[in-house]
View 1: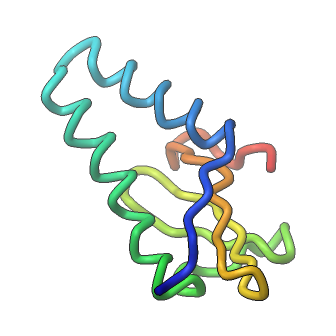
View 2 (view 1 turned 30 degrees about the vertical axis):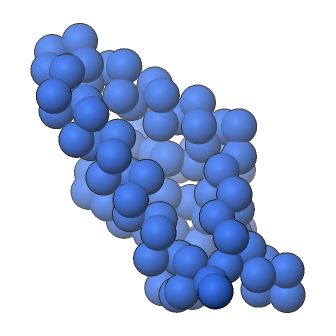
Amino acid sequence: MGCKIIFSPQAIADLESAVRFIAKDNRDAAVRVGNALVDRVSILENFPLVGSPHPKRPGVRKLVSRPYIIYYRPRLEEDCVDILRYWHGARGEPEL
């Protein structure tokens, strides 16, 4: 069994916000994007270090799911990965 994926409250709020924004124009697309973003982090269960290190935040990594960047922190000693933020790449850097 791989690492447990733990979504922070902020990551959940980010995801909900993105889906609501997209749903204003296209509900089907919003569902697809939301599901894709949740599915994207499943790779971290078995490959928690697959993303690139965040240069400004030690211990934080980035996983790209264009146009979104998923910020996460692997805690290998505890066999889990914390999903910190879902962030649209056009918005610059988030607070972590």
